[in-house]
Image 1 (spheres, one colour):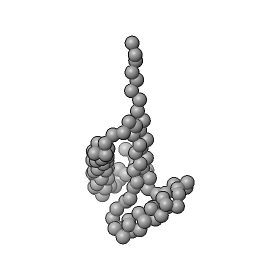
Image 2: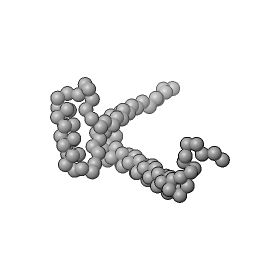
Image 3: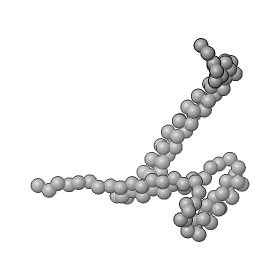
Image 4: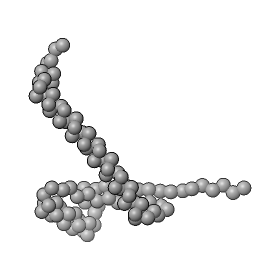
Length: 103
């Protein structure tokens, strides 16, 4: 009886700037991204490298990335809500946030 063993590999990396070992082409690309961010004024450019073996379709990869960003947005919304609640509490009950507060 033959035993089949599935094998796969996935490398995922996110960069916000050129790595030290980047080629001159990559450095120019990052320079252009930086200019675009400055012109735009309200964004953040990231580069996603994803290598999956066996290959998956671009559509499936895009779907996974989209779902990942949905989770990211949800987490950021929770953090924003928590920060807003803390701001209200700091204004309403500043004494609770004092370092030397005694019960």
